[in-house]
Length: 255
Ligand code: ADP
Ligand code: MG
Image (cartoon, rainbow, N blue to C red; front, side, top):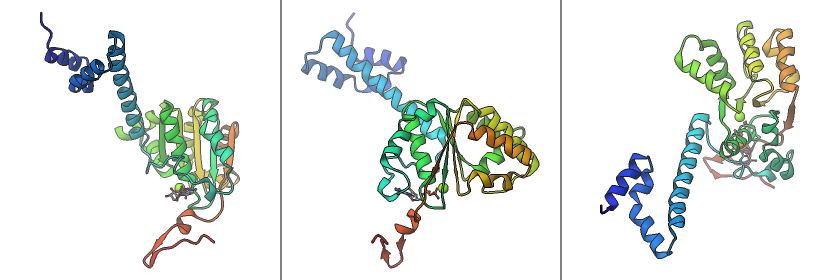
């Protein structure tokens, strides 16, 4: 039987090797030019497919993470943030804290890069194969409150519990009632010791009690969060303010 390109392409497509299938002639052409062995030809095709599948997985994880924007650690200008050294940033980037289920608390006033840093670490984790979920504190409380009512919230909570890293942005932005505080405690307790949580906040943990309300629940929540935690204080002027553009043209307040 004479095997045609079309026959091979059809088999490849059946096996979901879609892009290899489309570009089969090019692969054959390159391998002929390089005088590839049979092994080298096969290896070329399989490597391409493996890379494509991995890239797709990363894209899917990036989408599921639901970051409000995608900025990486490379986009983070460490020279603008005097309270963090590039050595510390590199240590964070290595993600040993994530492997050891450490939590991070990123503290500081608005605009200093807390959310950017959290997203940057989240993206790094995704490229390293971890499942990440980002959500603002308000959205988390809403999801916990309605998980028995809406399918969407149920899915969100399930994904959060399945993630390797959960980023809770602007924690303690709002006061909680007793029921919400209970739900929040239950949630933290479920993640405790197996999932890393990155919190961003403009208030230190010592002030969280005011918003959680119940002192007993506050202690129980803090115990679990603080058990293994690294607190990072970011300060300095707001990056937004320094680099804002104005109606009179872009300004820079750098001396
Ligand atoms: P917040 O601390 O309020 O969460 P963000 O992380 O949202 O602040 O930062 C505000 C804006 O400034 C974002 O667009 C962010 O990318 C940018 N930004 C803040 N700090 C830096 C930095 N060191 N390098 C680059 N961009 C920064
Ligand atoms: Mg923020």
